[in-house]
Length: 312
Image (cartoon, rainbow, N blue to C red; front, side, top):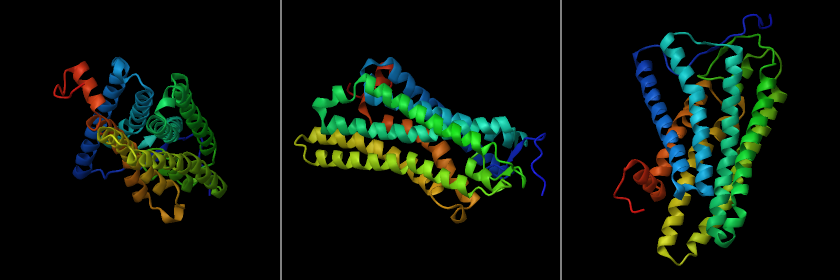
């Protein structure tokens, strides 16, 4: 079989929906969700920037989560919508590599950032007197820079390797964005070693941070159980349950997709699960953090004049 013609370096994204009226309605729904994600995450970033009461480590970390979600959804949905509406499913090699790089960067960085946010809550609830030292602005900055840096390095390594593999079968990627595991079946070389490396790196960015989050919240829940103040219990439990909801939405579909062998997965299943962590989660995160957080609602009241009934 001939190798992939390097002079024609376009891939084809088969997409998520069929080219019919049902597909168009579903795409419009995705565009609506995308718009909510843009507005919600942009609003969260703006509120944390302009409201002095939100200038705390927890909200600085939250602003980075919103930025990652904003970049993630903006990397994928516009191209998906353009391909569907134009009928052109092609994507150049460079565009595919850029899309894959940003997706993997956001995915890895967000996993580490969620672990940092769990540590922040652990220190705040279990060691409140040590909080100003353990979660100083410098420590918060180190966590943010570390999350972005490690996520970017991991993504760059995978992007460089994956886009130097010779592809000789078909250039049709059975996905709605350039997801590296979806590209590997198109390679004309044995990729089992690289697939193992993908599994190892995924384990470093998913189960290990999740283990840290689990341990942190185990300690937090133990501390909440022994609190004497009912108001303190309620506030701590609300904050932690909010974060755990976000963690579940993020980790569950990711782990189910990337920690299983390819033989146990189907392209359709992978695409449906990908909708959760690339489109739905970026839309849900700002809603979850705002509607269940009086401090964020109070900031909306002060900045936009909304929710004036919230006591600040």
